[in-house]
Image (cartoon, rainbow, N blue to C red; front, side):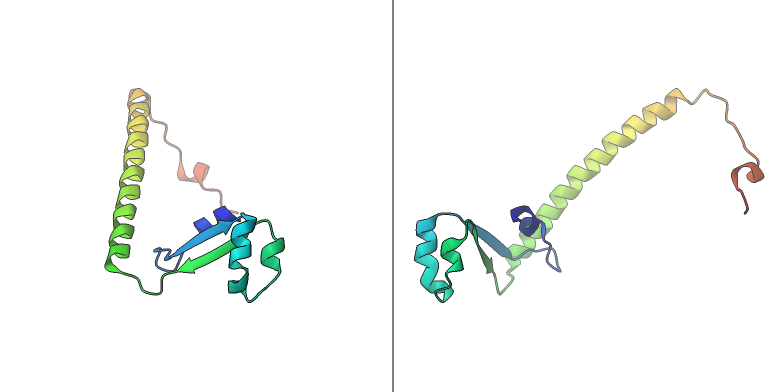
Length: 110
């Protein structure tokens, strides 16, 4: 459940929330009055508190853009690495004779 909450995207990808999972019984007892005295908080093994920012600040957007750029750069580096392997495999086959197929051999019309 925690992973599903963490991976849940917001509409703009900013995820302006935090999840706090409380397993400590004493902490749940302290929070009990804040839950309008709902007994479930005392009986459950994990109590999830959902917090959300009501206002998105410029710093939130800057952090999101920087994180996106960082992840994009890492993905691009991975693609370039894979492409280098593809190129070397292509070079090994460069001397092989090219085989041409007639269009009718490749496309089967049903």
